[in-house]
Image 1 (cartoon, helix red, strand yellow):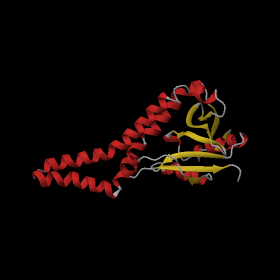
Image 2: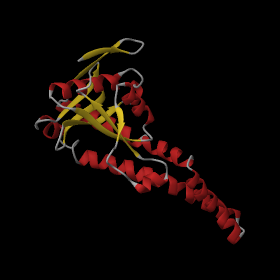
Image 3: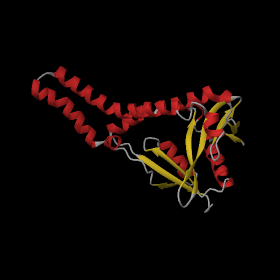
Image 4: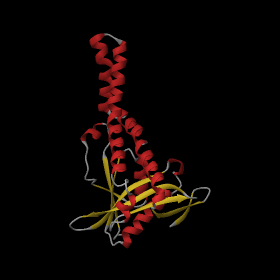
Length: 228
C-alpha cells in the first residue's frame, strides 16, 4: 500500500512484516517506549498533588533540621519519586513486549488467524509499525490496534495515518464491527491522530491508580466500521 507523504513527496510503502525487519522493529518499539518516560515526568510536575510532595520534600527537612543541604536532598528525592512511576511502567512495558509478541513476530502475528503485522518502509528502511490482534466479545467481532510506532525522524509525514488506514482496511475486509485501542494520556500526538482518523473515545478497560496519582491514565478509542 504505497502513499506519497511529506514535503519531499517521499514514497512510503506499507507491507507485511518479514524476518529481516526484526532488528529495526524492535529498535523503533524501544525508542517509542523510552521517550514517554520524560513526558510522564513533566505531566507529573503539572499535578497539584505532586507539587505538595515537592514542597514537603523541600521544606520538611529544612523545618526539622534547619539544614539547606537536607532540604535540597529532600527535593531531589521528591523529584525521583515523580520520575520513577513512569520509568518503571514504560521500561516494564518494553521488556514485556520484547519478551512477548516481539520475540517472534512472524509466529505471533503472521501464523495465527486474525493477527497481522505491517511495517512502513522508505528506501529499504523500516520507519513505522502497526499490528492487529482479535478482540472478541460476546456480541461483536472486533480487532485491536497494537504496536503503532513511527521512528522519531519520520514523524509528521503522515506515516501513522497510512498505517492506521491499512488496519482499517484489514478490519473491514475481515468483517469486523470495530477497531479498539488503548493508549496513555501522555501520548497526546497519537490521540490527536486517532481522533483525526475518526476514532471516538471509549472505556479503555484498564486502570492504574499509581499512574493516576501523577496525572497519567489510560485512554480508550473505538472506530466503528459499520457506520463508515
